[in-house]
Figure 1: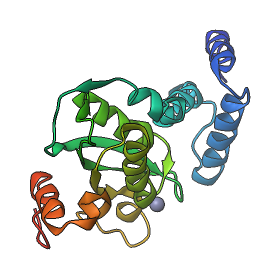
Figure 2: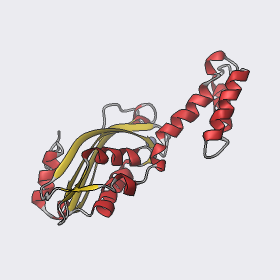
Figure 3: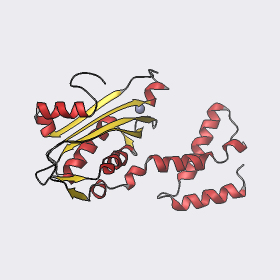
Figure 4: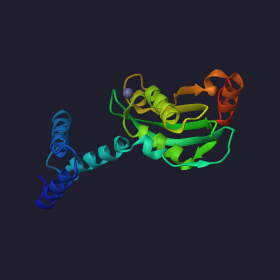
Length: 212
Ligand SMILES: [Zn+2]
């Protein structure tokens, strides 16, 4: 059984949650796991587990609290008419089908619009996290990153490549480790021009039609 201090900590945490039944749900889930595994629900080792589960889910879904328009709000006049690429942005996300993590790297590039304005480079990494820290499909996440840049930065072109491994393919189902999935979203000039697309894929570390 959880002690008084544990219950007090749980009550405090419940107050911070947008929906107040998170800890109850996590406790019930743990109870079910104990039912099917025979683990002791009253063991000291598991007393804090519901709280940890809730805290980790709040962190893993923190992207819902972020606003892409706010992340890309501040831009700088750079008179830049060349491609800007941030490559190998690490991320962690959660597959919406199995609630298991998928993780990997994203490369994001844009060709500034006719105003030549650019955004702080760290904002591209924040944008990736904004969409990664949600319940996701890798394909949708890749498109969302590209579309947010188109909508809020007004560039001439955008390219996003995401390469990730999915734990739901490793620890269950077909059980294949080492396989990675690559998804690409191209917008504007990067979609329409072979040269711009090749420059992007090469800058992002992916040669045209080849592998890393
Ligand atoms: Zn999955």
